[in-house]
Image 1 (cartoon, helix red, strand yellow):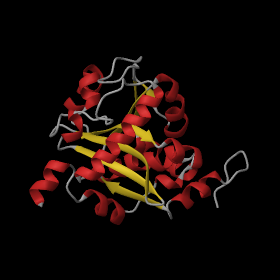
Image 2 (image 1 turned 90 degrees about the vertical axis):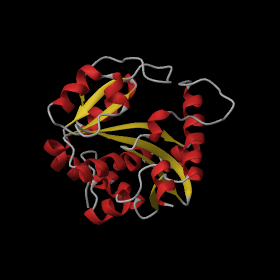
Image 3 (image 1 turned 30 degrees about the vertical axis):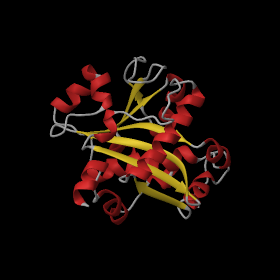
Image 4 (image 1 turned 90 degrees about the horizontal axis):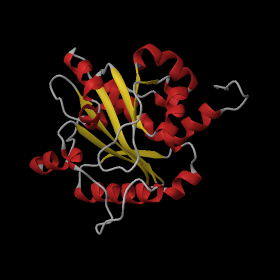
Length: 232
């Protein structure tokens, strides 16, 4: 059993969540709209967006063919969500590339693949009940990183949240905050080379490990609504 330097068994507590958590790719209209409503409530509560008549928050990036949108369910209720774009030389689309072209562009030009997680939101009640939900949700980005054998995982977050990514993922801040599409607050960019940090990361937080079988079950299916409808 893992015991952290402070004497707690936090890592074991995190692993216990995997017995009750359900990771779902949001490919249906119903699942996506539920996530859009959660986003709206979360961002509105933070003052990151203004009110609108739909009660939902989405954008064109949600429909890109390199976009994965996930819902994390606890006790069969949507607890959190995250969206990830896989930006590569073969698919040069994603919010981080558009907002930070001078930084992300050279990575792609040099042949690298990056995972760009965004729209990380959590239900307010779930966040109070399960304070470890950031670890449970960011596990999605780690699984996508492994599945695509990416070179880097990015983080586009408010500056006050950067400390968490630096502490947990050894992330490097690449620039000062910049304006970000549809959000009122500026966002900074961080980068993690997961491969060089993997052993230490999994030793401290084994929740971020996943099996090849689990990744195939999640990712070898349609990524977005348009593709899903064509299949149907």
